[in-house]
Amino acid sequence: MLTFVFVCLSISVTGLHADFTVVVGSPSVKVKENKGVDLKCSYTADFGATPRIEWKFKDLKGYQFFIYFAGMITAEYEGRITMYDGGLRFNKVTRADSGDYDCEVSGNGGYDEKTIKLTVLVPPSKPVSRIPSSVTTGNNVRLTCFDADGSPPSTYRWYKDNTPLPEDPTKFPNFKNLTYKMNVFNGNLEFPSVSKLDSGSYLCEASNGEGAPQRGDAVHMEVRDLNVGGIVAGVIVALLAVGLLLFGLWFASKKGYLPKKAESKPKQQAVYTQPRADDMDDGDGEFRQKSSFVV
Image 1 (cartoon, rainbow, N blue to C red):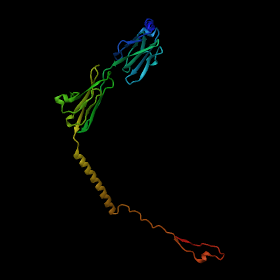
Image 2: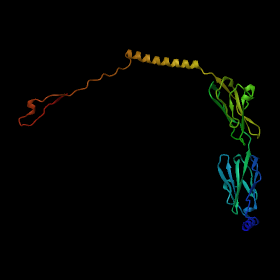
Image 3: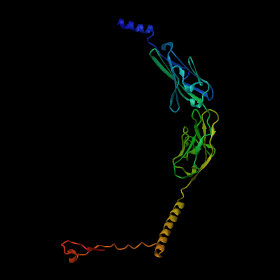
Image 4: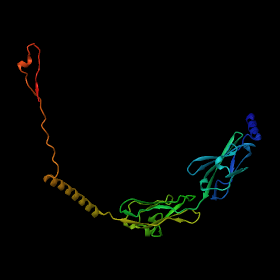
């Protein structure tokens, strides 16, 4: 028992029970595009006087890159960042720098890491929308809207005849007869079964809190009933055309305008004729066939 207590006291006094802790200034940093920014990362003395420090970056698509490795700034970041005791500094950021930055420290048998999320703020651009100009009642119709530049990603709003559409139409008496579904995060406006009440001029708006919201072009969507009469008329015309074609072929055949099939000639048959006696023996006892088949 005394030995166990002595060992525990020895570990505490000699500092073998180390924390090995990495600390970041802020786990989430936001900065406007083309501005400089510091990503601060410090660590406890348990790692020793010369710990191994590495910085890694993972972009929004999930690809990972080294920024600082083996005591050197990697080629992709030379001239863009500066390392100092306690972090790194971007001279100027772009929207491609948004993502997660890992600060990893190891030494004296210890290891720890912390992540800093960097968001480069970029206003939205004019969104690209896809709105059909004419649709048929009862069909599933989807309108789309997308802003490629906004950071953080934009959210979307739709307008019909310059009136903003609520995200959930069932909660508003003026829109309760509309059956659309709106996704404010991906910009889709979907009509599971479009009706004539949905006819109108539509446009979408993108916003992310940076700069002014941006609107796309307005497009008038006309919802039309299925033209049953036109379909029936088309079928009748097609049947009449087929009937006239068949009648024309019959009439031409009857008048002899069409070439007749060539009459087949009878096949020639081989007829066997029994040889005469004088043909069989020529006096020397040798058989001589003079004629046997007549064609």
